[in-house]
Length: 393
Image 1 (tube, rainbow, N blue to C red):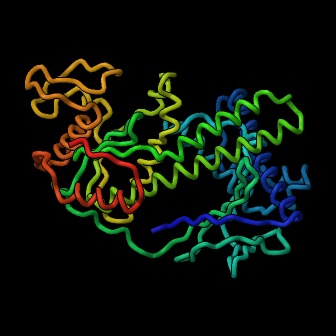
Image 2: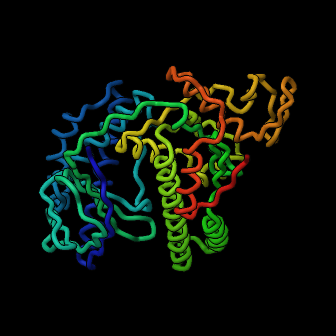
Image 3: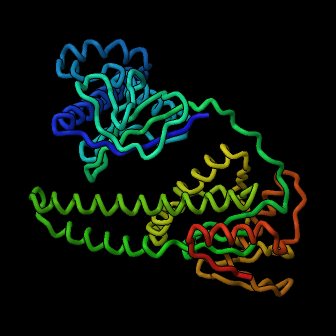
């Protein structure tokens, strides 16, 4: 099993210059070969393989001698990443590869020949080790290193280590230890047990502050020093919000997996939802995709189950009691079933149906939805993590 570690780097001025050279060189190689592949496809109708790009790299380094100051293996990784990007595009997994811009920060990967010792990182082409803050020990054998820079100007080292620990077998799926979750905008998520988790208040305050800073940035003259300073402030605020959201997602995912053995969610068409301009901003702020990805990663390492139901299953529109399909509008937060006369909360009803669909999908008998010890356990976990929540029961 692999485990990722991320540490803050504190390079001196000389090291910062060399880091920027690595960022710029990797960006140059990416853009050069992307342009070359595009040109070759237009002229011949054929693409370019990784080996073809690899064979052209030595001549490119002769033409641009400053590339010799860069770790050769890092440039090879750029070609591998570009080849992977095209492969993902042709398999309809991702969009077409784009050119990299200088303003995005930058990153480069060192696949081997790096060492970490006593809060110092030694890598090829650097005379002196870079200082880093190791807030935890690295378990296992280090396999690769990626150094990155954020738009706010901070440097980080991300290390991938192979722990040697086998991925545990997932536990048996049972109705009593399972929950369905419906992610939303008014509430971050609602469980089939009727527990509703809200976004933290400090995140909302930070988002208001960001809006003010972005407004100030728009008033600054383009190309001026004041605009650059305002841009750094906006980048720092965005980074702070991203860290707050990640911390919140970590706490919620931990609480869910401590309380339940199986979490059932919906396969969300986030890109399709983003086309609704009234909801796009709220969807980005909620960060549903990153939360579900985090939930899957943690569940895999803990022997827990994540089940996804189809995105076209009528989870919100179907009465969880009798199965009646109601013509539900987006603006309706509650509705009453015409057949069994039960009033439903939109999110809670959807979560109940998501759980039911997930259990049926795995041939597990559904339960009655009564209060379970797992629900009580979730309440305790949320209280310990300081997460705002309410019970809809």
